[in-house]
Length: 509
Image 1 (spheres, rainbow, N blue to C red):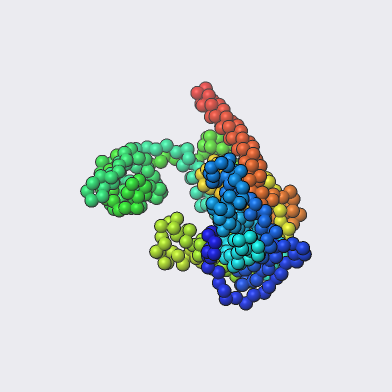
Image 2 (cartoon, rainbow, N blue to C red; image 1 turned 90 degrees about the vertical axis):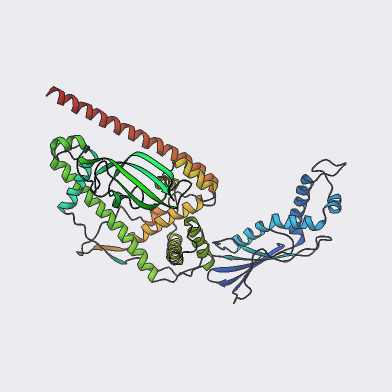
């Protein structure tokens, strides 16, 4: 972990310790734990010479592989020669460096600590570099998961918005469906929101062109291109040009302000098909527009029921967090905030730092709360649940599921994914024990969003076996992908056949 005598990271000497001593029996590695705060612990480890001896032997073997001594084969250099050429001090340092992590992990396991961050270690006393006698004494501080009192969630009353579907909402869904089957028609008028414009762009900095693009089709008002483009294009007709300033989103000049020249080549509006029975047959499995409309109304209603589930979960967490105190480890939060701000290149943005800090602290409190519920409810995570969660995560990042799993496995993040699934299940269990009503006082059926303790303790995935889990999850992901691809192909074939039949029937008429 570092050169002899060096303190690796500063440890705080001030504390009011609650000391827990291990019952080691005849073991020659002794450890104690001092609770420095609700989120900080100090582990003191004393290693007797006989316990360090295997590491010293191993160190001699490693060093023998790394040095070249005339008259000796590589790896066969005797310890006495290594002592002469390299020195016992180097052997001791090598042995301690390689064994320290093992001693620390053993102490963490023995005392059932739950570390949250990187440990800060200090070698208090070294064995003698003359004959390796004397104990190795370590002092290691680490942030640990705080213990909290489990709040009562059984019978907790939650009030969510009532489900009410208006005619306008159904019409909006129908219009959205019609727009998917619409055609673009060129019009001779200024562009307005919702129109599609064909444009050419030129970006210049200090009068020098740095980028350009031609023939871009852009929906005015979508905000999907570059800041300021919607305002610049509004009311422009085909053949007209304007300029505006905006920050570039990519390339060698990313983030720099450039003068953007935009020229409109054409203005097109979307012509929607008539909402009649013919459209219903083309766009859906229904024969009439009335049946399609009723189906869309059901979709809106289901969406709002889903919204009730989301709202209920959020309300549950908020209420539980107000009834329990969750200590915050400042160092963990600060590291998280710094990573976030560095990723956005906004380290000097004090206002944003405050926002990210508040968000990180809220997330931490929620995780500790749900972890505690998961333990109380004996939640387990099945392989299928982990796989589905990973597939959803891959979709959110626009990644291939197998590549997503491999990336997580390579970064050692599979256990954290297992923890997230467990938290989701814990929240579902707690929600299932709450009483949920809508704003009209009616009981709300959230059976799709809740779980029981029995359902939560099925087949489990061991979060510590990250590589094995990743391999199993990878196989399940591939199977799920194949199933999804097969279903997609079948659906496409069915749609193609229906379209062909429609076209043939129209030709006969």
